[in-house]
Length: 361
Image: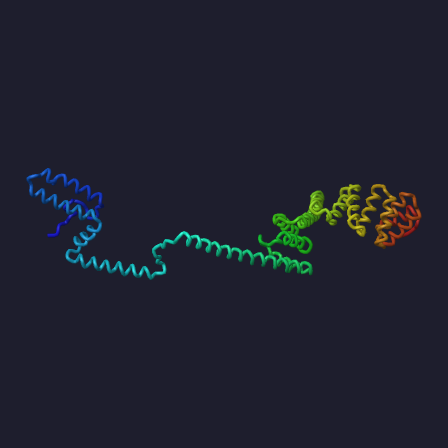
């Protein structure tokens, strides 16, 4: 009769190795031949316990024993069937797309070459991506610039917006042009200022930075903040000393808003120095001289202006006022008359009160 080793050791069929070992040691102490020298029955019992322990403590022997214990004479047939099923599953697994073969050991040189190849592929992909992104951004910027110069402002804004990318080397210029379109054409001051801020963040050159500051100054002036506007114009000339538009704006603010006539005169004289043909700066300089009581200089500047521009009523009016201050009545009245004929309203009162002419409007 087939011996049930689990019952012999007094353990469960799912007992682990430690439990098997402990059960054997406890029973071995009772039936060991040294403790039962004259008992044939104890010797036989100890022999059976030893066979049970040897069988159940060895995983392979235990597996075969468990099959035989469960299936009896059919154990060998079941073992072969299980082996066939395992082999079939293993073969199917090898043909599966998710099957991974055993890891192959590569040489150090092969690993280095493989790493270099992978790095080269990654760098190539990254370089290609950067190249095409940069190229597309530049292409869109050039289209936007062409449309801007051709006064197609809506198309220009669309192209410039498409060019916005950290890889665009003209990013600051793109924001500047969009800010100018928003300010002059779309009259959207908020969006214009937003583009100006982004232009600053794009690390602009001194030239672009000066134009951003100048445009922001115009925004501040438009919104009534003359002090902030003046500061922006000054910063613009710090970046670009020959920025005549910003210098002229400072001169205007000094002359008409802050009444700093001497400072305004410096700005306008700087403009004339840069460009002697700048007739607006010459006329403004004459007005500054007049406000400072330098009437002879004012007349001299007006004569210079009239050599470049004729039929400007304000020029005749300024000369008439300075001539009046110098008590040159004939010259003064003659210029008051010309100013009146050219539509300067203030000249009419001087003609009637100072020159004694009875002229009606």
